[in-house]
Each structure stands twice: as C-alpha cells, then as structure tokens.
Image 1 (cartoon, rainbow, N blue to C red):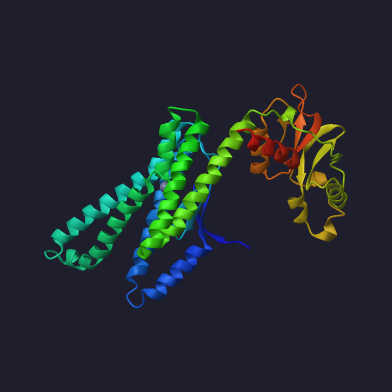
Image 2 (tube, rainbow, N blue to C red; image 1 turned 180 degrees about the vertical axis):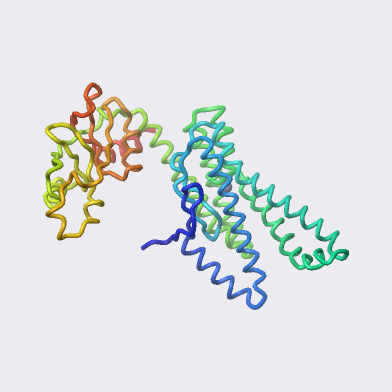
Length: 357
Ligand SMILES: [Zn+2]
C-alpha cells in the first residue's frame, strides 16, 4: 500500500503528502471547528515547511545533487537526497539553507505585521488586514521556531549536518559521522524524555525517535559505503546467469529469469551486449501478448561496470536503475560481458563491509 500521495512537482521533483499528515490535517480541521483558526495556521505553516525544504532542494540542484522527492510528515518535511555529499563545504551549505529560509520568512512576516499594526487604525485596507495580523504574527513566530529548532545539532537534523561538516573538516569523514551520530542519539533520547515529562510537547517523542533511528542508520550507512568504496568489483563473486537474445519472446525471457532466480536478465545479440531487460517492464505487458512480443521491442537499461570500479559504484547503479543485475564488461571491449554482478554478490560484500570497522 502507498502511504504518501503526490500533490505537485517542482523542478521535476515530486512533492508528496504522507498519509499521517493528511490524517493530522483532518483531525485539526475537526478540532478547530467552527473558526478553523488552528487549521488555517497549520496549513500555512506547512506551506512554509515546504518552502524550507525547497531551499534545501535549490542548493542541492546547484551542486548537481539529485533530490528524489519531498515528503511532508506531521512532524515536518523531508527532502530525500539521493547521495548525501561527503564534501563538508557542500554539506553545511545544503543543510543551512532550510533554516535560513525559515528565518527569512519569519522576519518578513514579522515586519509585515508591524506595518499592519501601525497602519491598521488609519487606513481602510489596514483595518481589514488587522484580523489577518494575528495569523501573521503566529506564523512569524512559528517560522522562527522552525528555523531555530532545525539548527539544534542533533544529527541527522539540519544543525547536526552542519555540525558533522564542521567535524569533517577536522577529522576523517567516518569519525565525524560517528561523533555527530552519538550526539544526535543523545539529543534523540533527550527529546523523548522531554516529551514524556512535559506532555504539551508530546510531538517531541516522535521527533526524538526519528532523530535516534536516523542518526543510527545514517552512521551505519556512511561506514558501510566508505568501506564499500574500497572494494573492487573484481573482488566480488561474479555470476554466470546466461543471456537472452533480442529475438527471444517475453514469455521465454520470463522463464529464464525465473530459473536464474534473478528478476532481470542481460540481452546479447551474437555475443554483443545490448542491455538489461527487467521483470517489472515485462509484467506490464498483457499475458496474451507475452508470447508474441520480443525482448528487442522492450526498453532495455544500458548499464555496466568495469572490474576495477568500486562495488559502491555498482550498488549506486543498481539502486538508481532499479536492476538486480549489472554486467561486468571489458574495458577494451565494452560490448563484451565477462560475467554478471548480482544483488546477492553486492549484499555479501555489504555484509563484509559492515564488519570492517
Ligand atoms: Zn531542513
């Protein structure tokens, strides 16, 4: 089941609402009946949360870092970044953009509020805006709080990323991540305890859990990928899974995939590599057409790695192109497949990389 729903896209990046967010808004709407003040306030707040996330995305785009999507949760927004930069000077800029945007919005709203307060009794427009003044002042305060809260050095929150970048300029990236993660987890525990003691801030319990789990997972991932970067494709078991030709029917190709246990298979024409055909694409074809259509008529993913490349690179290709196999090709002759790197092979080296600390 899908838990997030796309509502729009900006710069080709989908913006999604998480189911829990929609439930929250529905709950708030009921609670704030009949004046809907709280509902309006939270609705506007989340528009500004989105602008905060878009500030991160804007900087990411500047450095050619891909953002998969922006998801809004009841506790805030998350920009899913494809690859967290390991360059401190980029990471802190990327992280600080959001809070700076929130501060800027807060300041502008505060200023607008002052203008309205001064003008309110004097002009008819001012008088009609006076009722909007309250909302504006509340939103100004909330934006300033949003910016400030995100700057808490609780990795993986924005402030924690700035902190890691600060450490990473002075020590090894993995060590910087380790320390930032320790502190992030401490903050996570602190938030949970605070939320339990002061029940008004119960949302902090959820935020704290997110921070704790996020800090643990990201530290783990960083260590694994740093270790993986040192492992060559040639160090990983390479499999022979056979190939299909462009003339093979889809039904036959599916049988081959089924037998080899990999859901994707490589396509070769007279020993010349053509690409990878994926199970997912074949499943889109109606069953009655599967015995008529040929593999050559399907979209192929032209992916490959050299044996001296890092396993990390192969893993990135696999997750980006959503393939379970990547052929290893010769450098001198990139059309010739030597063998195939599989998700199992990568998983095995991941396991080894985890133990290498
Ligand atoms: Zn942020």
